Amino acid sequence: GNLHLTIVKNDEEMSQAAAELVLGQLAQRPNSVLGLATGGTPIGMYRQLCRNKADLSKATTFNLDEYYALPRHHPQSFFQFMKEHVYNPLTPLSYDIPNGEAANVEQECTRYETAIGRAGGIDLQVLGVGRNGHIGFNEPGTSFSSRTRLVALKRETVEDNARFFGDVGLVPTQAITMGIGTILEAKAILLLVSGTVKEEALYQLLYGDISPEVPVTALRLHPAVRVIADEEAASLL
Ligand code: GLP
Image (tube, rainbow, N blue to C red; front, side, top):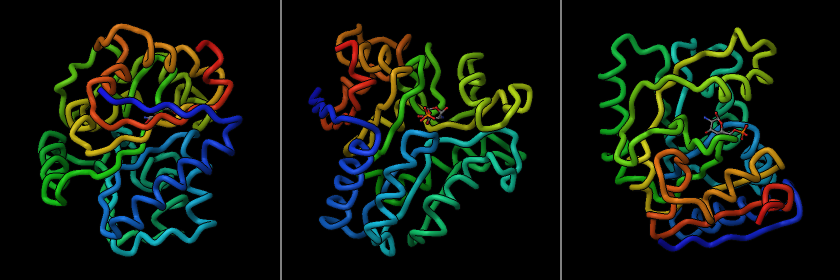
């Protein structure tokens, strides 16, 4: 693969560098199809995009994942996160995110894959990584050829996301996520890694065996990956 790593001082510099890359993508192709991520890591990048008045008026966005079965209007749904950080302030031409309330989940997953295909595929996929190396909600053990589907979350992932819900018992234990196969079809990938809790995941990405046991290592099979990590995340390198 072709993995390009940049180490910056802190989360703020990571966010700036990431926003510049996205702005560059939009400048090159205003009608870009962007794959977007939720979580704490990309928030600074979205702020920078807002500050720079990024023009998404011709762009389409897809999200990696959504909790199941969480109502769309629940404050911690990824849909609400996206509304707050992207859909409202940046008003993309069109956006899509898995529907965590779908009655027929299988049908929803097929719909989502089809929608990505109809849009022409994802030009640039923004990714974070979980402490255990998960991407999207593809937990350790996920096949690299997996597609969008319903998954069960690992205990550590539920615990890590408890900070957003206040109580671990309120965190959904399932999600609809793009598969690793879906993610690897993006033409380019931008992975953001920030903070000490991610140091092992970043180390594994660079030096570990390429293995479904550490889903992020699948990125080494992709031809165009940019990794922007802060010094804390890079402390084991
Ligand atoms: C979440 C999301 C991932 C995200 C990861 C890290 O569970 N499903 O897409 O990359 O965990 O989250 P954070 O950026 O908050 O550390």
